[in-house]
Length: 253
Image (cartoon, rainbow, N blue to C red; front, side):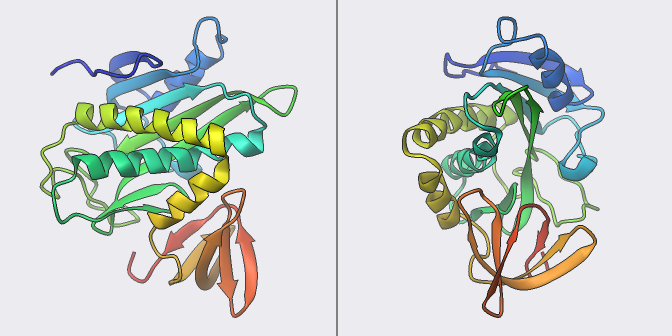
């Protein structure tokens, strides 16, 4: 297997096996910026205790992409949270670059990537709050099904290999890192509105009826928008409800 070729702003830490790339990235991040700089990326061929949102187990056999990026943005925590949408755009555009003709790639609120209507990737953003409003560090984790996918997942899943793509995990990592650098530059230069508009152009289900499960409650309505903080705007017969976290279902998805 060849070595990944990443832009020089990244420092790659490559591992054969790890409990979780996010957990390893946290262990490195707490050592401080002098030892673990912004742009350090932990990449593992296999995870033994991979995690998704809300503590869900993330199936992590060899052949898929598991990586976590350590970031130290000098912005308030509420602004730094926008980086999950930046990452979503980067993954989307990376997959479109690598895609064979005829495949549909979409982002899905809050942090999923779909290929042909099925989940292929998920993003996990975690932060360490400092004494002020600016987080000490952020960990931006990505799990993407390249070679294999779970058959019994809560949401219908797929992999690039299953969809007929020849791309390897290294191909995806290289493209993702390039696009993340590009989208981060646009975010810093033009703000979240530029990211928000582009995310909505690439998203699943805007204007469609949806179900949102949050805090033991199931809400229904129409996916109207995402707001300036990235929260979902759900239209319920003319009343707009703002949802900051939840699981989204469209029809059979």
